[in-house]
Image (cartoon, rainbow, N blue to C red; front, side, top):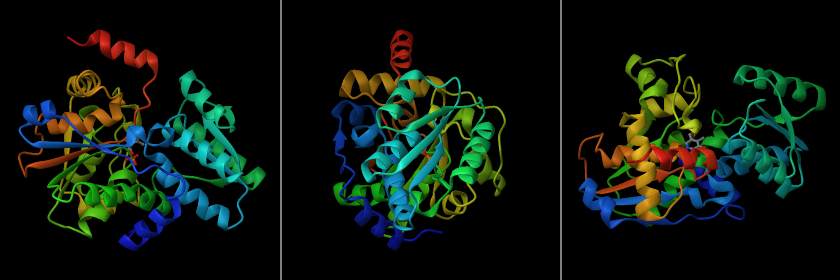
Length: 318
Ligand SMILES: *Cc1c(COP(=O)(O)O)cnc(C)c1O
């Protein structure tokens, strides 16, 4: 388990790289949800998502140990974050992406100066490829969520929320592999245990919700959601115990609720967020967890939506 000390250390380690992101408010959203709503804006973070926090904490730690070449397997926000921080710290980075990856995401990774290897279509194929690179080239693997440095880095968001919204009652957090919520819930519960931390998953990627119900890590094999950052098949071995200990509830949102939240935030708040972040707004708008308190914060985890996806979401809106 990570501790508050790990998160404080992470905050010190990453402070010279990351942005302290703003907290946004919306009168309309507050009226609609009958609460005071706050959005923690990690879509305005460097590289467009919170992943740069954990990646910076982890990559700085392995660089201190002498690593010169780092590897990961992700075409998404984690891949971009690792590529960015490697270039910034002068390390070599290799990112293994699926052969069918979205071209704008691959271009962003290349733009940060990383080597890109397109390999296979499943995460198992990509991980095997990354492992062979690690063996051949003495590279160090940077995991997307199941790692204490990654979890502690993401937890720095929790510290900022407590400082920026001192009277917050409920925090909604999107859940993929659980790095984000394990860090945030540790920061919040070890400082102010009365604040509720609620995880949000798409109905069609409900692995953590199911695992909590069964009280053991449970994999799902059917995943079908537009929230591409949340398409993990099971929670992590390190993140799950933290979620069991600190997270008050995991709620589920439908694909339609995600789409409505995405369009609402774009139209009314003029903010471009990605579907994986919209789940936290959807849960607040539909009051999934019941009314615990007045002051509610949704963590906007990222804003990297491909233009084809934005176009299709707007065309589908009523
Ligand atoms: C990675 C990611 C998540 C999920 O984070 P986990 O640490 O895997 O739970 C949520 N939103 C966005 C935008 C992401 O990139």
